Length: 163
Image (cartoon, rainbow, N blue to C red):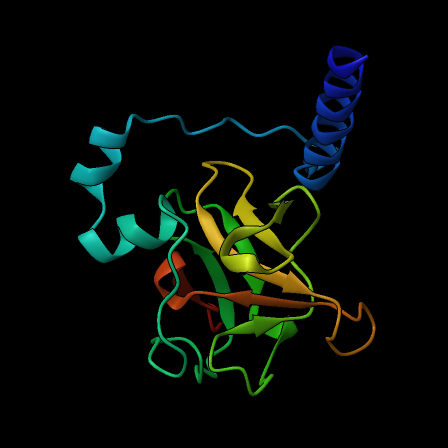
């Protein structure tokens, strides 16, 4: 009986862990994945970029180069140049990190549950290279109600071309 109870307990624990770590991969268009070893990432990223993009770190609030950035253009992944966000969806959330109410499209960003640091959050990663971008929260403005809270270090910026 004790063995049976242990097996049932382990089965339930396994189901809970699977549910807690479920991921949402982007739908639709499949882009070429960027796959590199940790050593390759370390050679092409700065130590700060590596810590945030590959080790799920976070920069301090109000310190990033894009949190108060107002220029028109496109924000891309610092790891692979995948186009992620438009300045048209950027807004001041007051959080101290760049915030967007939508990605360019649902194929650009993957989401997965993040249970680190005793919190329940939703991590966002680049769909092309799996780099950590930040987190998405359901307290953003209309029309999506979402707040993509992104580390500036995870981003590069391409200004809008003027004719």
